[in-house]
Amino acid sequence: MRVSCGEKKREGGKLVKACVQVEGGEVVGILLTGDFFVEPEEAVDRLVGELSALRAPLEMAPEAVLEAVRRSGARLIGVGDEEIREAVRRAISSEAPGRVA
Amino acid sequence: MALPRASTLRAYVAEWPRNQFFNMAYEEAFFREAREPTLRFWRNDRVVVIGRLQSPALEVNAAEALRLGVKLVRRFTGGGAVYHDLGNINYALALPGASMDVEEAFRLVGEAVAEALRGMGAEAYYRPLNDVEIGGLKVSGLAASRSAEGVFVHGALLVSSDIEVLWKVLRITQEKLSDKRAIARSRVKRVITLSEALGRRVEPREVYEALATSLSRRLGLEIKWDSPSEPELRRALKLYRDRYSRPEWNLLYTDMVAGSLSREELEALGMIARPDPEQEREVPGVGP
Image (cartoon, rainbow over all chains, first blue to last red; front, side):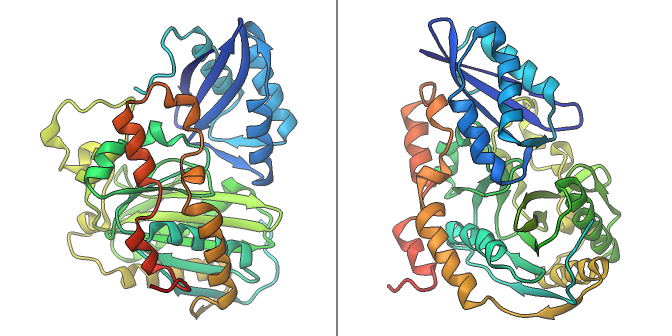
């Protein structure tokens, strides 16, 4: 199992970093971190739960993450679908393991 | 923006600077306990405060923080990592029963803070999403949370913080320092302290009065200077024990990236994310 991270900052907004656990050609868990905001507060734990339990083939991961965010009822403030998609894409295509820059 | 009917804004200074973990526990406690609009002012001794959704290893130079006596604590609101020292003041506004979204809450408080600073002589303005600036440089950053209970906004305001330490302990992944001599000149690093902006020493009390006046006016409430209540303190002690004094909370989201951290960095993270034994003495309700 390897962990790969990718990040994307919205112009004039916040940064989202996606760290994906990949096993057998599949994403088996994902973490979204960053300096964005989430509302309502009650959705934070749901969001983290949905993402850590997420399973999807690599190429479906970006959309699967967006679906998980929607299911959790969380509204992210400071980053949008485009940034999340891109961060996940970069994580998946990243050669480096989850290295801290 | 909807605020339930209230006539006063309860305001007080409540701080335990030497126990940054209890300070943060109190921050959540007074929001959960609030029955009326409440405004808290406080300061922290050296600590990096990270947002609810940040991974600490990515935000702090832990070994450096340990060397400099800087702690690490996670707050319950989102947003980015900030450095607090006694030259930074924190303001926190709890609006129980309010139903505005986070963007509105930022505008409300951000504009009030900017107005207060203008009254002190600084050319400050609110810059969406969550900054207050003077001449293009950040002097205050805000974070917020909205729940079924209400809305909570808090911010950190640089009065006379040690910017050099700030840049040593915060990880900046995308901005590389090319000129280390420029560290001391905060202009290069895009932040400014209020003392620098006004060209004079600034006492915390002066800022508290200005902020309280500006916020109460915007909210249409009368200020009532008060002090922490027993329920607030009890709740804070519980949150301290259950959450804020624990690495399990402060170091959330470290597992995923732990594999790429050096042992020195991992050990340092463990040490800065919990209070030292002598810090326990600062906690009210805990005997020596």
